[in-house]
Image 1 (cartoon, rainbow, N blue to C red):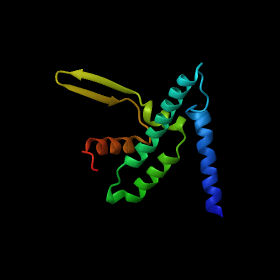
Image 2: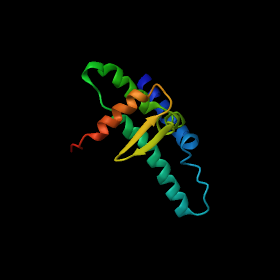
Image 3: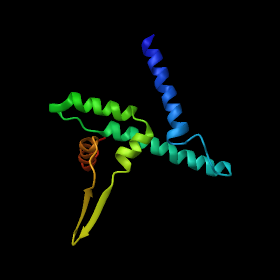
Image 4: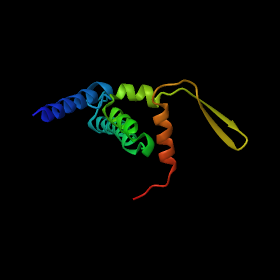
Length: 126
C-alpha cells in the first residue's frame, strides 16, 4: 500500500514538473503544429535528464554512492537539473590544435558530470 502511494506521489511530481519545470503542457504558440513541436522539444529536454541518469557509470569501489547519485538525478526536478548540469559556467579556449573547456565554478554534481563524460566517450555497446 505504501509503495503504491509512493508511486502515485512520484507520478504527481512528474506532472507538476512537466507543467512548471519544463513547461511542456503550456504551449505558448498560435497553432497546433507549433504547439506539437514545442511539446516535442520539452519532452526531449526532459528525456535528456533521464538518459544522463541511466548512462551514469558506476565504479565497483563506490557503487553505493554512485547508485544514490543516479537515483537523486532521476528524481531531480528540471529546474535543478538545468542549474546544476546544463548552465555550468565554462570557458572555451581554442589554441593551435586543441580546444580546452574550463569549468569556472564548482557544484556538488561535477564528479558525476565527469563520470558521465567518461561514459559517453566509450564506444556504444548494443
